[in-house]
Image 1: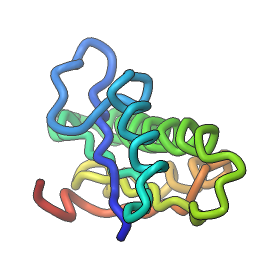
Image 2: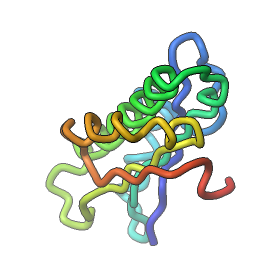
Image 3: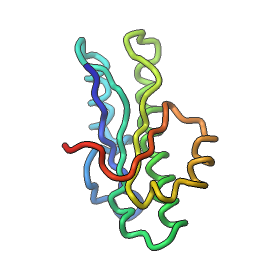
Image 4: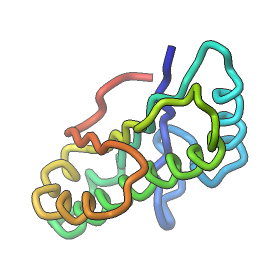
Length: 133
């Protein structure tokens, strides 16, 4: 079995998270370590949704939210990769799933720049939430 970890994409002064856990938090590291040790579960990837992006009023602002989404799930994948280094049970690449309607519409030029970055998985971009918690 595999699971996707929901990552909080709250940024700046908006630290009131819609859902998920911050990748730099002790809770995230504990969760990753428990999943790595699990004999039945594996980490499939990381999901981030910038719910606050619906307040964006311009394409550049929505693009900024998209960049934050990608950076946040990519950071989570980086931390997880550091924890699983050498573990042959862990599969690659992680799925880095991001997007809200505003950020998906801002992706035309932004996506090319993001894909040039060193991502720790395969980027999946969608408009809005793809599953319910």
